[in-house]
Image 1 (cartoon, rainbow, N blue to C red):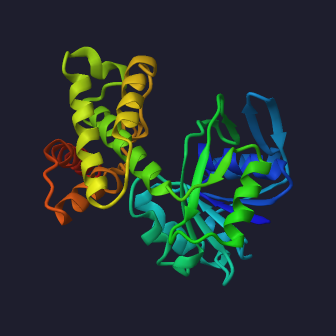
Image 2: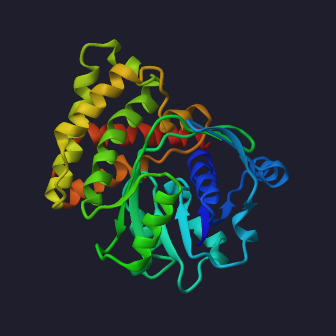
Length: 307
């Protein structure tokens, strides 16, 4: 397939590199000129548990420079940039192009559906780790998975082709009718740890420097899980809570992406995470005081950084 990756940061470059190694024609679309130039000049330097190598059969362009429709467009941009990025990459969106969001947060299917027939929109969640180590260099260590499905729940030939392509690249992908539960569970995890770290400046482990730090994180998980259940999504609250406890104990030095955005003076994805949960809670008249307070606090941080 011709696969375009919109948002070629750490995750997008990892996926693009592995898909290119598997024999697909891959176009990376991003606005980081130094990264694009490095890939076009010397290839993508990819480091995984399989070793370090250079992937040379990649095309790297700004979104507006891409002129040929793709069979599949995988979207990794931050949620707040989705519409602008898709608007710039309109030439990639042919009448047959399928779109897959592996982004954080809620509302991604609706955003992609503004640019293509909703029947061609897939949504998913991934646990693959990735780091950008400089222009043209990405690394990933450890295992991950992908769970995805058509946003409307239909099993289509393109869904099967996408799963096959990602598995050929070694990315452990499954079509999962319960993908919405996985998405909400990731939202619950991120609403707790990302927003708490963003407003405190703490690493994940530093949230346990006070006795009730873990308890506060788990209260947020419980609020998000309650909202998901009210909307008919059967999330596994105990599983998310276990993942939060594990992260607090074993990922102590980790700075979540939202904290990294705050430290870099960038706007965060708080609206697609806590913001979307608060909106969904309001629709069902569910109180989510901890999630809402953190939303308001991160909004203040965002407003300060954007002055």
